[in-house]
Amino acid sequence: MHRVLRDVSKRETSVTLFGKTYSAPFGIAPMGISSLSGYRGDLAQAQAAEQAGIPMILSGSSLIRLEEVVEAAPDTWFQAYLPAEVSDINRLVDRVAQAGVKTLVITVDSAVVPNRENNLRTGFKTPLKPNLKLFWDGVTHPSWSIGTFLRTLAYHGMPYFENNAAERGSAILSRSAVRDFSGREHLDWETLRSIRRRWQGQLVIKGLLHPEDVALARDLGADGVILSNHGGRQLDGAISPMRALPKAMEVSGDMSVMVDSGFRRGTDVIKALALGAKFVFIGRPFNYAASIGGEAGVQHAIGLLMSELRADMGMLGINQLHELHPSMLVHLTRPTFDN
Image (tube, rainbow, N blue to C red):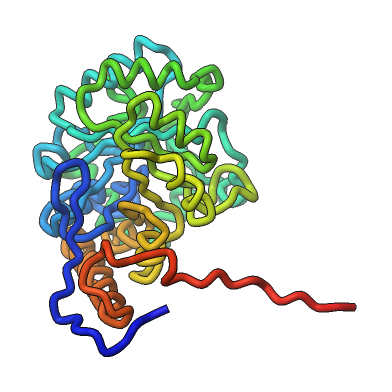
């Protein structure tokens, strides 16, 4: 609900998070295999984010070594899927620290492999297995085949899953390799407490929805949480982070509460901030931009969202993001119809 006839000539979108001032209250969410959908996609997103003054979270399922990305964009965060063994977790955490990463994001909503029926229908899985269908997909999509895949092979060799563990994983194209997602069922909050003791930088826990889990994250010393339903691709019927946000804010204390999953427009960001979120992470639109336009495409997409945000603030009648408040939102109930 907006206010009118207010001086909104001094609108400011910057926000301070973990002691650093960013130009906007949104960043780029972690997305695996971005460099498969667009040439050097992870690097394009990271460099565009660095240039724009917003954070980008590099996925643990990325195809470019995190050391290379952090060298090109030093403020890049890193998101990890935890290995099954404690020794492997420790080695991965140490590698991330040695790379110069300052903010480590641990995804915790992937204890088991989800049943993604769309991937089953299309036959998509990684590593890609050479077959006639894959060959035909390449022939019928020459722009991708030449501009992304063959270009990557020519200049950088076969892509590998570089960051799932302390060492290189499987190649993106293989007849026999299988990515092992099993073995995480036993991981618990004590695992995160151990990581907190080992990791000296900012620790963010991603994938929470329940307020009791937010409180547990707060108590173990996490610097922030990202409320997330994994883009709606994990537990069918899980609530949206926006619905979880009010209860999470009640128990978060001094911890920064962030959100992702399904955010697309400036007004989406505004609504989350009004409910108390400190930051919003957006994924697929930036991946699409990187696929089509590389770093310049991502910069353009960031600029579009930034412009929307500034316009929305002006139409709401505010100059500063801290002026946003839950009272500006109206909860709409669905009409009921009597028989």
